[in-house]
Length: 155
Image (cartoon, rainbow, N blue to C red; front, side):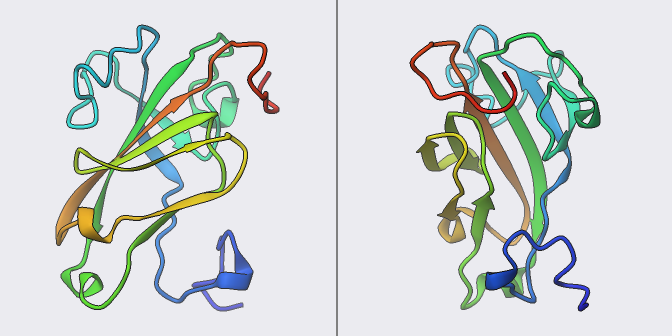
C-alpha cells in the first residue's frame, strides 16, 4: 500500500497531497458559552486550555480527558503550517468525518463555515483564509441537552 493512502478517510477520493489532522489539539470546555464573545478563535484562555487527542470525544479514555459529565459547548484549536507552493493553483479543503450537533470552523479567526447535524461528513474550502506559514484552525462544537436534538453514541 502506498504511504499516502495509510489512514486516508475516504479511499475512493484519495489524493497524494493531504494532511491528517488527527492527533493533539488544544481543547477547552465552554460551559458558560462565552468563547465567541471573548474571541477564543483568536486565542484560547490559558487557564482553560488542555490537550485532547482527536478524533476521540472528550468522554473517552483515548481522548486523554475522559470526562463523562455534560458540556454543551467545547472548543478545539490547532496550528498547521501551509507551504506557499500549496497555495498556488490548489484548493485547500478541510474535511470532517463528523462533529457535534452544531459546528463552527474558523481559520485564522475568520469563519470558514458552520454545519448542523452532528454525525454526517462535511467540508469547507479554506483556500482564501489561509496564508503561507502558520495558520490557526479553531472548531467550536455545540451539543445541547435538548431532548429534541438528535443524539449520537456518546449519550
